[in-house]
Length: 124
Image (cartoon, rainbow, N blue to C red; front, side, top):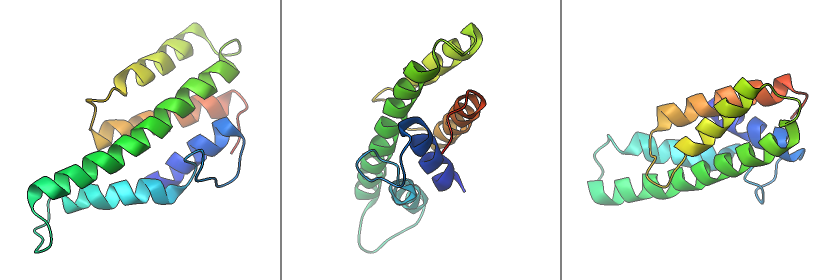
């Protein structure tokens, strides 16, 4: 279900349909999720370093799309949102650095951002 939450976040802030250009495509997230699941499986076709590289590459793509969407969404609600919400969104964005590769935390950021943006009238 997280893949759809990811897509809804991007569709919500960009006010668009399913768009690979903006990253608003759940398949981008699903690809990352598959690479994440492959980290723990043994494969005859790739070694652990290759699986780790694949995950990090796909995770980075998702992370960048989420970070861009959060920044874009913040511009839209900045004057409607409470100071607390603005600080929370800024903290989320600050977490999404190039060294960040924690899928569980990313999922939590996506959920929290969706809640805040939806509460301020941004609809997918």
